[in-house]
Image 1 (cartoon, helix red, strand yellow):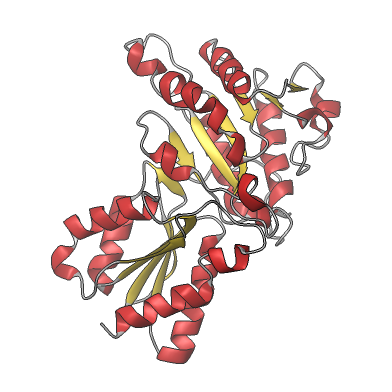
Image 2 (cartoon, helix red, strand yellow):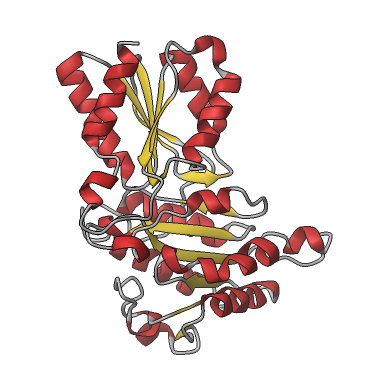
Length: 322
């Protein structure tokens, strides 16, 4: 399956297993703009897979209401860039519902899906990576997969998790690669980073699409510089896996973090400051962040904006020579 098919498979499994599960959002009834819900309305009926008005605040507010009744709510925001009208509902209502009621009520069965990240032609309103906005909000979980196999396991874990989850799907990967993905349901635990390549000289941390970029950088570093890179896919942004990253940096002594979102206040800053506090005496070079620029996401200048392999490789080389 490719990534969008693995998402469809996860949603299909959830609807089959849980009679209370419902999927709703803009255009999901006919399959959604990225075809992630294709065939589900025909299979499960229009009461369980249905369109909403074009109102993100309403979609999430409605999802909170469904989740509070005990049903499983799977909301789709058509693009992550349009999640901001729902920001108040997510941050002030969903994230705080359990805390506010002293655990009498909660909306933990709410999952919000949204296509995320650059796509090659999305420009300023269809390319953003807003994960850092939500990483500042206790009470929710934020997850970004890198591949079809990861996407299905992590999405099923989000849907079954007893906390509201935001699941960002790298849209450039929807049709990019095919992987062996089981048709049956399976789970990948949240808040566990994965070391996808072991190394000894430098730790590279990324999530979503950027994992594939840093893997390429690791190959370039091995080939051109003889440098051994440890590559970590963070997977869950909140709450993130501090132990795996710090253990790796204690071993390698160097850390490069890369994401598409702007540099200032990006989640790389949080990782960087935590590692600096935890691993200060292990560091051989300053921590490097290779990220997008502090500008709106450009259209024709996207190739210059994104933190591509050459920018990451350049930063890596500087660290090794420090």
